[in-house]
Length: 265
Image 1 (cartoon, rainbow, N blue to C red):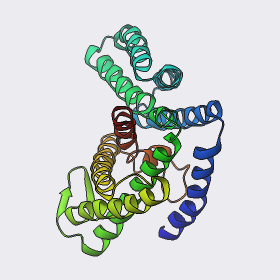
Image 2: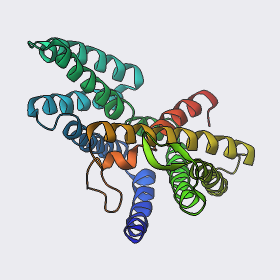
Image 3: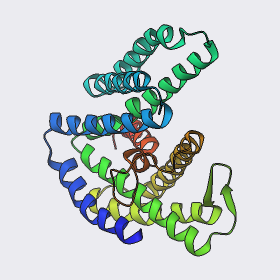
C-alpha cells in the first residue's frame, strides 16, 4: 500500500503543479468541476446506496452550487445552494414517513455544502491574485506534508488514541506528527514560492492548515463510519476515492482563500 501511495504521489504532484500553474483559467475551473462531480457521485453512493433518484438529485444540486461558486464566488454559490435546496424540501419530505424524508433532505444538504460549496474554493483561491496558483500549491503541499507526518508519527510513535469512536487508527502522536510535517513542508514551500513570507508566517499557516486538515479527515472518517463504507471510492490508487483525498484539503483551502483575501497574501 505504501509503495502504491508513493507511486501515485510521484505522478500526481508534478501533474498538479503543471495544471495549477499553467492551465487556462476556464479549463482549470472545468477541471475542478469534474472533481466536484466525481466527489458528488461518491458521496451520493455512500449516503443513498438504494435510492437512485435521490442520488441524481444530490449530484445535480452539487453541480449547480459548484457552478455558482466558480462563476461568481461564495455569495452566489451560497444563494444557489439555498434556493435549490429549499425547492427540494417538498419533494424529499413528501412521504408518509416525514422523519425519513427530512433525513434524506438533510443528507442532500450536507453533501451539497461539503462537496459543492467547499471544493470550488480551490478555483477562487487560484484566481484571487496573480500569486493565487502559488497559494493553491502551498496549501496542497502543506496538507500532504501534514498527512505524511501524521502517517509516520502514528506508525512509529502512536500510543494514545485521538478519537477512537470516529477513527481508531488516529493517535495523539500522529496528530503532533502531522503538525510537524506541515511545518517542515511550509518552510520549504515558503522558500520556493514566496520570498517575502517570513518563517513565522509559514509556521502559523502550517499549524492552521494541519489542524483544519485533521478536522476534515476526521469528518470524512465519521461520514464513512456512519454510512458503513471503508473508502469513498477507488479512483485514486492506494488512496481510495476523490473524497478520501479532498478530506484534508477542503477546510484548509477555504481558510487560505479568506486569509489571502483579507491580508493580500
